[in-house]
Image (cartoon, rainbow, N blue to C red):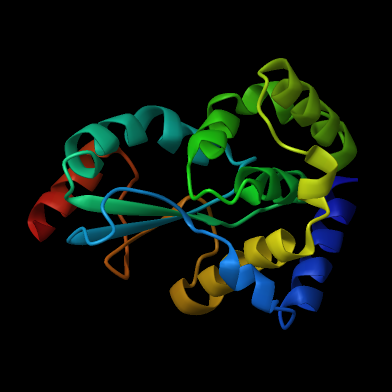
Length: 196
């Protein structure tokens, strides 16, 4: 069943590759840090990826404290959904279109509560319940059916493949160069310190 869902997801992405809607240009990128920071990190992530959740929960807090909050680094979160459940969750994270990362971080920190079940529909139901139980204000049906948000998420993924050769998540790009060391805070910090 999961193979069929993944195949359908790949077909959707290929079909939508040329469907870049003008309205998606109005959607704000989710980012943190100073717009003109010396270092820009782009992170390609899938919301159902355990390694991505690990990055958010165990690496990101130190990165934020030492580099983002001090104005040295700007981080941009790019969508790279690996399955339909991640695709829908990306649309939820992006839907409020405020450029804030709160919903994205919430989805990663609570990943085990909603990424379960045999189908994307089951994951959607768990996600809906979780958002409602935490009073997170999103119109679920409107968000996952918003064509401009859908195009925006898909185009993040397409750009990741074309421009940065992304083939796994998380993939970290630092000042347009792929970070190719094991992803832990120690390695990331060493790389960033060399660029300051």
